[in-house]
Image (cartoon, rainbow, N blue to C red; front, side, top):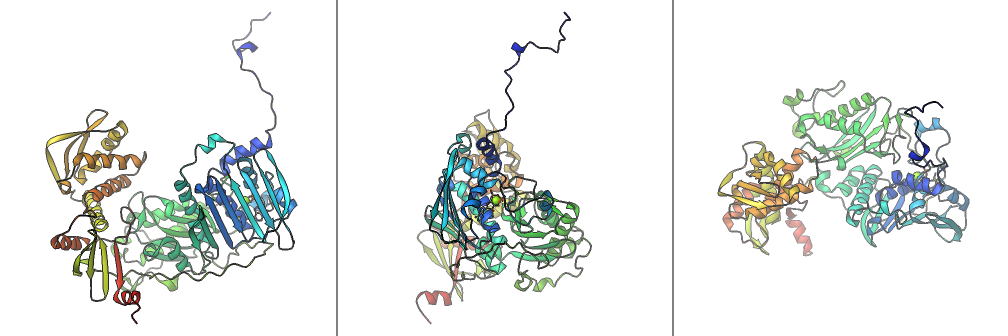
Length: 609
Ligand code: ADP
Ligand code: MG
């Protein structure tokens, strides 16, 4: 007998070998569900996109517990008959795609035929639907391993799909669901982006039977943007439109209005909302040094690509795309945005060097003095007319309730010089009453001071550093290890804010100096608050984000509080400091700071003519 090679192992040493079998469809769908329906927001996305593909222009979303217990989407699209509805729940069943060649020109949101099958595998589903040409609708009920049951149903034309108890049979996935508030937030972010992308849709969201969003169809992009982003943001957006190589449309914020992530920058490719890296980078590089590192402008950017130049089948949830000529797309976006920036008051001649102007950019900037967000320049739709929007083949709309137009907020909040206000007095130990010749002004003393201090902390941290006060005796403050690590890591950033902090072992920090303004406050309490806010930033939070978190915490603690009695001198000082601070920009806690009403409006409250 030949000696066995060292490679040969005795069968007993090997793990038991299992037979190859095709996956059970339920298991296959549960696995697919992991990619397509991660959480309630992704279920909503799939269902709403199906409604759009079915030609709906009125979509109602109803949720319970952030969508964890119920997600419901009701549309006025063309509906399904019983046989198609049953087919629709099979994996790879789609009415939208027949051949691989069609993929490059796909105009529908869906095409993979996976969503309904995946959802059915991990939730209890009820679909009720009727086509316009049928007298009676159909209802299908099922979920997980339970087969679909079909029955006739009386219902309006369109589709109503309820998805209950998401991941009831996949506990491992259920564990990853966040609180109802977090899930709801994700859903609203999706709805807001869709509302921006498609002003022609009427969208409503109810959460636990309370209406939380209602965007009636409004073809006016500016008005829709007001409705979604609020007047303060909308007033600081500027339109752009460029057809050089690719068609680029948008409404983007002035450089002074930005966000710590791309979450408020809605990117559309052929009307599809995407989170595309190429486009994000293009936007950032177009702003160049006008934006801090890690900051993103706010608004909408829509790129239209001819058929065959973009592949949307890169990601199961279709949130990413691949451009055939990504460099050209990049250049077009940069060009379009710089064209817009070139005319803004933020980019004048000196910046020409900082922003190399791409070919074809208008060379004479618009007259800066007269430049302002121009309504007339606003594109009437994100998609230029040359590109035909997708039209469903089977349109059948039931009547859309005609809810009145939303009131149009003022385009520009009127400027107020705070130091010029006449201070009348403090009310409720929290609000400062002031007036001018033509307006009544109410200021939240805490919010306003907090905003001022936040600005000062951030500004001075970058320049001279914030005034600090050495502690006579360094103070040791016990904390948990992650907090110690977070503070220690941020030490270099905290110093310009006036804090000199170092780790003292794993469970304490030593404070040697604190910002002068915190003079009579409790250092230990400040440091603990700081530790909490820094640890919430998560690992790898950018420098600026960390600085802002720290500044926001300090500002909140150092500011006048509700209940503090402010002397007239204190108020005057605050009003002076408010000068030059942009109070319409995000306040550290996102709350309004100043309320202003013209006397004519006050008169109206009392029914004066
Ligand atoms: P896909 O959207 O990729 O085709 P789905 O699983 O999401 O796959 O849907 C399967 C099919 O079910 C769709 O192709 C469509 O024909 C049909 N369908 C789904 N939702 C609706 C709806 N709300 N109205 C009409 N038809 C629908
Ligand atoms: Mg779909």
